[in-house]
Figure 1 (cartoon, rainbow over the protein chains, first blue to last red):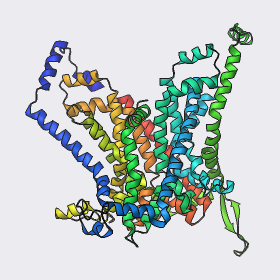
Figure 2 (figure 1 turned 30 degrees about the vertical axis):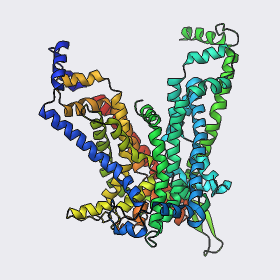
Figure 3 (figure 1 turned 45 degrees about the horizontal axis):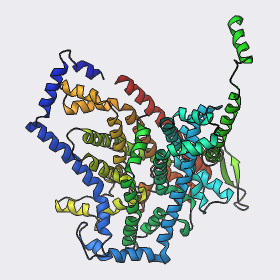
Figure 4 (figure 1 turned 90 degrees about the vertical axis):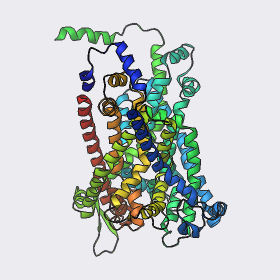
Length: 306
Length: 320
């Protein structure tokens, strides 16, 4: 800020400003050069981020032999369908089961978790109650707790309760998303005007009916954003799955792929399973993410520009 | 002293007449609030508070085999025994050196890189902004484990087109060698998060009032000076928050070193990072007390780092 005031001279009248700006618009060779540099840098960065995924696409079309004998971005024999068939039928179709498990953990878990977040964040925004800010501070503390720290004691507690190696072992922890509560409070401040609530109360509506019938629909975009956050978190949750599960039938996709990957060095035929399996797991995510990008962005904005 | 207090007390005893029904409304609101927050907090207590409490409890006990090793083991209260055991374990101490080195390389690359990309996309000269945002953010849609596996394959001779390109240019590179494995790991994580952080910075930049930037441009500040001296200080909170989350995430690194270890990178052992150490202590050696103490020490480091980053961040924000 200080530099701004330094460089501002009183001579800058609006007329002059206009003049300077239009002069800047004219493309001098210098401006052309820096435009080239900016866009070239961006192209390099985009190449960096897109290259690995594109390679995955190429690799998934190759046979085991071509995978090693052809160059990464060269085409070998087109083997994509054979590879897909192999992935889906290998070991009695265990991959499909993993995929289903991932959907259960991520979609069902995140939907329930998001609902809890919205209810809690809305209550924090709308009502005054005893110890409110202390409870909220506890939630914020929860955001910063390293997940790896609670994983081991959670495993031991889960053993005692008898839910280790069941679906609940991953679903229950996925229900708690402190960052989602924080976001929900921010969204509720923005989306649900107090006047609307007052009007509904005057009309004699009960608080829970107001929440379900009026506030919840208003919070729908926020619901989507928080859902996406917890969805990626549970779809990504590798450490938790590794700790909690040892029955192969309960694995989510990423743990299954990890297990396949761990034998590739002894049995190279697993490479194409891992590669094609990764592609199948990644494509729906990319599609969802491209379609739903405005929700991502609003969540990131709410989180960042506090 | 007594005089001013008395009316206040009186006022509290005899509240001003309220419209009828207000206290009833209050009560129904309190009930609704309780109903809405209870499920979350019950679960919060079960999967966050209880495990932390249990970890503290466990960290205070050690397992001792009784007698001659017959009759199993018994748990004995050991106070800070597990903490001193963890801190005197060279493997554990080394793991902190490893992540310190890792952070020294990773944090500047990550924050500098994503900030640079955000400023580039935000600059008036960038074309196809939507495409670049999407392309740069895309890796974040890919689960960390799969991202790591893809890069591990891109590091593997025979599979990797990257190594082919390096070879075609007449160079050679070993991603797993002791000299290069750290940068290989930084690359793995940077690829996953750089676009995510870039979008956060870009969103913050978009919220900056345009007049402030235009004024600087009019005053003759070049594009680079505007970016560094005007734009970056204006999004200081976003930068500080991102540094905070990046640090907290970086000290927990697990998947990437685990996979590199599995691939046989010689300098990445099974207790390379604190989380790998905890994993090994807990799930391989079944020394739960040691694992709990180690994880609490890691959490302590996280708290400490958060505090330092916030303090430094506030000072920077005040200065700019």
